[in-house]
Length: 97
Image (cartoon, rainbow, N blue to C red):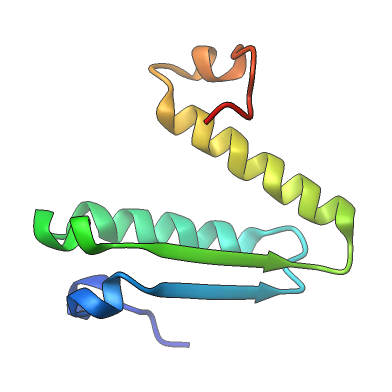
C-alpha cells in the first residue's frame, strides 16, 4: 500500500478526503490513519491546514466493536481538547464536545 502525502495534494483534494473502513473491527487501522493524518497535518502550511477536511466512516457487523471504537475516539478527542489528561478523564459530560 502506498501512503497519501497530504503536502502533495491540492486544496480541492485536501478539502474532501474520505475513508471507509468496512469491517473495522478493533479500529487499529482507523486509529493509525488518524494519527498519521494528524502528524502530516502539523507539517502543512497554514493555508493547507485551513483547507484540510477528513471524513472517516467506520462500519462493522458488530455493534459492540463500533461502540468501543466510538468511545476510544471520544476519549481521544477529550484528551486532545483538555489541558491535562486528568481533566479529560474527569469531565462531567464526555459527549459535550
